[in-house]
Picture 1 (cartoon, rainbow over the protein chains, first blue to last red):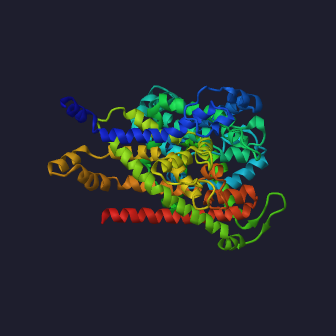
Picture 2 (cartoon, each protein chain N blue to C red):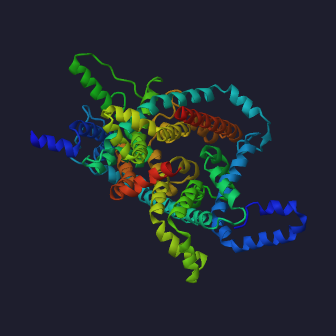
Length: 281
Length: 320
């Protein structure tokens, strides 16, 4: 009894744990169903009664999806596109953020910053069609650049970087760097970037999630199987005459796994990426 | 420091004009790195942000399918939109989807956030991870998993429903989660709750952690029960966070695409076609670029006004 009372004090009531455990099970269940379906053959996916424990494990879905689609290429495409978009966005946003944070009395500072803030409200749905038309005219349809460039001008990222740099890089640091003979670009690269690493990680995660999972833009821009990203490949696997659900689940597991693993390893950066926007904005 | 309106005072005093012009140029040169550092962002922003925004406005006055030459049609796209039954159905569906999923999602997110905010809670990372991870999984994958789970004859959900009914001793048929026009919105809403609860829980958790703990202690000293502390201290202070989550969810429901595109394709019929899918279908299904742009602009303008209204109402209540 005494032990029970002590437990309640340090751990909260058992009711909270029951609620949380129930919620965790419910929310994790689709992930479990994806994983277990990936190792069932097609007829076992539709078994009646449903097969909750996938035993014996069947690896044939992975072999089939490897044989019948260009999944390795699609995985590589996804990594390349997401990686480039993250790198480009971080570079462009941190440079612009530093510009707005450091050179306060530059002519035009005020209205350029107002313009940047205003663009945060432009909905993507309004610019999709013109950007698509432009990409067609530039010959960027079905290219990596067509996937990478349009999202890279991230006004929110600029705003966020400016806030973070203003709050975390004291003006004395710029002066010290200047006295030491460091140029403005050297100061950006060697002084500012190391200080703003946490904000860069969080913004990077945010861009990564959106880029990695993006279906709509891939659907619009990418045309041939060798250019497909994982979400598009999975979408295209669905057929008019029946879908090979086993293959879909296997590919889906491979598409979801990298981000879920990264999330479990770097939970703090992921959560930071989500909340920073809400808290700062 | 120079006054920001130096250029204005220069024109008002012609005698100093040359001097001020020179000083402005000097300031530009002294701050040249400002422009160099901004250049990459603004280059991309003009090409992929500002220009498309204006181009889209121009497109909304055209009839154009990208193949035949465009014709100027004035406001007739907007007039046609006002007569378009499908557009109004998509508006109604969007509203219903929002009504179905935002209140339960916000309630769940708040409850989980309050539970996770307890300092004494064990395994915090595990609970948070389990509820949050839907926000990072590819929507297309999970939408297909949902279509399996909620399948009519052989889905797990209907199987459990049937078993549960059998235990109670009732003869239950299958529930038409994805086959009926009135159920499809419910199923999409369940997917949305699953997807966004953890994300908003994390935002609310950040809001809760911003509350000064001494306020709780003061309330406790005054003899407030735990429930009273929640409703009298926590919830009023959380109002800005609730407002933020509500507005973002509202905007998200209007422009949502993957969920309906994969899970229901907007159907059956057009019963789960939201505004986002309507815009996509008009643009990239029917290739009516002009019409889709007019619709996109109308929706963006309406949503902008709705957002302002919600924010204003939310703030007014707060001060009253």
